[in-house]
Amino acid sequence: MSGHRLVHQAASLLLHYPDSTWPERREQVATALRHLPGPETDPLLRFCRHTATVPLLDLAARYVTTFDRSRRRTLHLTHYTDGDTRRRGASLAALKACFRQHGWEPADGELPDHLPAVLEFAARCPGPGRAVLGEHRGALDLLARGLSAHGSPYADVIDAVRATVPTAPRITVPPQENSGPVPYPLERTPADEGVRR
Image (cartoon, rainbow, N blue to C red; front, side, top):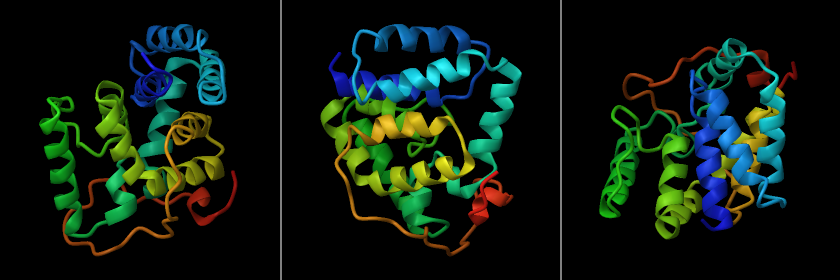
């Protein structure tokens, strides 16, 4: 597996919810990455080392706080480009069509813009997958800033992914329309207001 594909596969596995398979998953990722040292894999190895000492229940709670309770740190990429507008549905449909065109579908119940799913696609279909990541580079940048402000070690995982994707025009604020149910909690934290914890 090429360097970028390995980074994308590793990041996908590390960004999934840390369930009972997490310790084995993390160790498999760390073992694979040790054979490919460099600026793209070093942040992933740092994340693996950091989380190796965190109890599983604590890590799971941190995951929920990090990604599920703030719109500034969601793993759903189209939120950053489309916000809560009607066009988000079209963006999700386009992503799903792209995946199907190349013979791949996310797991049941998983939205196609969920970053671990996009990274899995990029690992399996590197050409079109890297193009999708490139289209959402601005979203990755916003996510990275949100994670850094939150003081989250997951920022290392996103930085590793960003190192494999060309830069893109900066996104400032996701569009807002509130055209229907919001698919993520609306709770705001001090970090969302620019206050470091």
